[in-house]
Amino acid sequence: MTTSVSPQRSSAAPAGAPLPMVQVDGLSHWYGAGEMRRQVLQKVNLTIQPGEVVLLTGPSGCGKTTLLTLVGALRQVQQGSVRVLGQELNGSSRKQRQQLRRCIGMIFQGHNLLRCLSAEQNVQMGSDLLPDLSYRARRDQAREWLRAVGLGDHLDKLPHGLSGGQKQRVAIARALAAHPRLLLADEPTAALDKQSGREVVDLLKRLAREQHCAVLMVTHDPRILDVADRLVQMEDGRLMAAPVPEPTA
Ligand SMILES: Nc1ncnc2c1ncn2[C@@H]1O[C@H](COP(=O)(O)OP(=O)(O)OP(=O)(O)O)[C@@H](O)[C@H]1O
Ligand SMILES: [Mg+2]
Image (cartoon, rainbow, N blue to C red; front, side, top):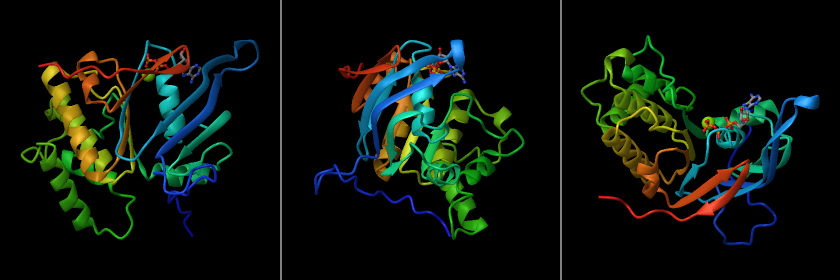
């Protein structure tokens, strides 16, 4: 039997209000034990609606990746509430987190592509966990995703034969192949030049929009801040809203 991760309206939400994809309330987090115990998140609140693109910025070490991994159900919540797709992660079991992760696409800086697999096979892995899809259907979808990210001519290439921007596009295609409801991206443009970085985030935003998928993206890159519907800034483990800059020419 599988556990459903369909959104369930929290009892606090008014009837008719859109159900948030992510609702974080009073989230605090610590690393270490004893004298080494150190607080890295301090009562963080964050709500992300379906289809919304939220960019998270802040100085190195302020807690951005920690927040992303907690929302991505990769870490156990210690204090506060994290509801993702309506499911409370504080007190959740390993199995529930595993189940939820199937609905979340994750893109990390290092691409995490398997070096011995072609672009097509890497993307196909993204849909491995989708039920009721034949091998052939998954392969055809992987090809479609790679065409959608402009890599239709590179299906058979291994990662080492692709540029940094192309590898990042494969990682995006793989994350989206799983039809995620929520996409978490940690500095997806960090290793890219200006033009590839811009192309990658524009593509991410367009594809997310088409799938009505919410996006939470960590970035240090001031050149891409204008893709955000909302910008939030973190400092010393605290979140604050920030104005979204106008697009630059
Ligand atoms: N597994 C861990 N164990 C102990 N301390 C950790 C661990 N992971 C992160 N930290 C510490 O927690 C703080 C927040 O780390 P985090 O990776 O969330 O920051 P960040 O904002 O993502 O930084 P960056 O922009 O450099 O990626 C840092 O001081 C870091 O050294
Ligand atoms: Mg980080």
